[in-house]
Image (cartoon, rainbow, N blue to C red; front, side, top):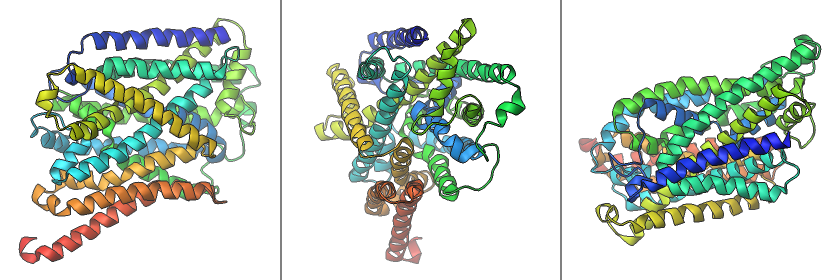
Length: 499
């Protein structure tokens, strides 16, 4: 079966690199690499592309699929809470979509999330602080996805050194992203979504085959850990439910990758229609993965330190014949697609942020000037590759410090939530009100980021590891409270006549 795994990975290599090379050949300016303007290559063509790309981005190998299988024995059907909250988070973006489009259409180009906030609050400092916080978060998320996912897939090809597999899988990810840019990411996201659906057809088929040929459903369901198929209470559940709610529901509204897709769309219907399909599609795909994770113990016996998904794949690989080979091929293809869909999205988002919100600001060249310079393509690609290398080293350090996948998920995504209150304010309030809050906004973002990571680190080194689940809650509360205090102070300063 190792040959089947290698063939599946090689198939993915050829497809994704080909898309990147073709997109790269058509890129003549930075607007063809990043969604900075309209009617350029860096764009989303229609609502189908928008939805498939968005759904594929939410299906991460490390932080969703592997995390589901890792948590299934502990949380059971409570995993479906992640399904509900993810769809709810995309629904929140859909509710604000028209307002985002209207505010963005005022600009003579397509701004990043941080430029938008900086302009609305009239604060260059806010733009840069927000960009730094987002970049650190996305760099961490990208590296977690790439390193953890690659190490997982490396186990499936034991005849090859693990370090070599990790390097090859990682290089493919940032090669096609660096060459083809945003457009390559959108096209490959759609291909990767197809591969994920193939996984969700073949893997359940094996579950059914296994149950039927090994004593029937009742005997196999009896192998599940107690409480797996119930909503019974378990230790740390309240913190988990609260943390997941806060991560999933508000986070998409302040997610740079979602704003990138909106910026790359040419029509408002592309965004609104795409988000409706994203809400429904994410509910279906996440539900299937949660169910597969809960039922994994029918096939794989729990082993300390071993992800149950590896146990399932081991059983599948031990089989012979065309059916077993097809299950392995399409499962590996889907898992690698899930890894790359998330990794490439995070990488192009952080590249866009670093290039436009930080480095270009320091160089002080206007966008109209940079659009005419082909050298900007090289600069952007250099930033992208450098960011990928630095982030990978950072996550390796955190992993060696004892941070698990779950710890990193709540730390990385939780710390970014400090932007959410600012995004909501920028969409519902006038600029003259926002500009009085500029200094408070900067403090809110920075404090939320620091509080999120501080909570995660504290939780990691205390006996009660469930405290890590509170990282997003405290990050969001800290940011909201500081911004709320700012509103009150400024209201007192201006007096009732100006309120």
